[in-house]
Image 1 (cartoon, rainbow, N blue to C red):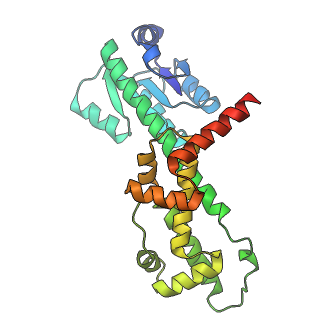
Image 2: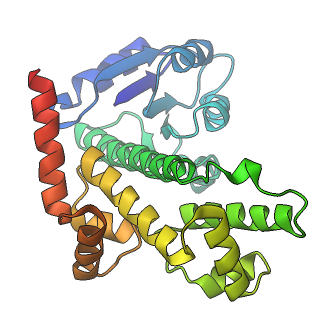
Image 3: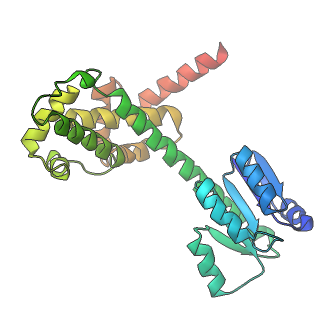
Length: 274
């Protein structure tokens, strides 16, 4: 995880460096910049997870830099450094989606509190991106290889294909929510029975089978690649009932979630020792 400190006063940057207990945080790199241009150049070349930015700088201000960050590095958690203690300024910070703002000069306690929360938010955003990425990859892996060869002349063939794709995309975006064939059918303006038949023809799976496989495959990826608790993974995969999730996952993979994670960890260790 990387941090960028932006302030036109080098003494302010050094003060932040000196007054922060970095061993209690988890930043791999701490970049510094003295201007809008330097900051933009750094962000263009490096991933920045958290930015601590002074509001008043020569030329373009910190507010302008944060606007640029919102467009070009939207996952970065932004914090404002300022000498202004008023409600209107706080409103401007919120409008720019800043996580917080720190009054200068900042005490070590305040710096640790705000940077610690920013680090947690950045980690959560990164986890969320990975979570959705796994879902998108699985949608692709379940794509019917013969779909392009279906009879284009069949009445409603193109419309059916579009409805199935829309349904798969909705499942991917709402996998943690309750999903029913009736609700999915209503979203594509199909009769539930008709959607079920079309979906089975297009994918080789019933809607319920697809949802179960999607959720279990997603859970498997999260078990292998994250440190999330099994209970949280169950919830994110659409199974708020842990016992039910364990039963379904074992049916899908042949082992319980905890056994699956242990096997995955063992495989990683074996590969790492080769």
